[in-house]
Length: 62
Image (spheres, rainbow, N blue to C red):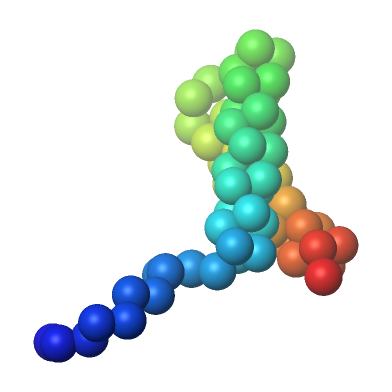
């Protein structure tokens, strides 16, 4: 492919939303683990928090 124009894979808005959601998931996993949940439970909590954060940040970042 001779495409001289280099475009980013994701836009800035999408990267910001994913970064913030990742940080929310990481924080929720840490808090869940510190609260006494096992690792699998903490990962389930983190996944739910990440999914909710993506929806939330997608709504508020216009």
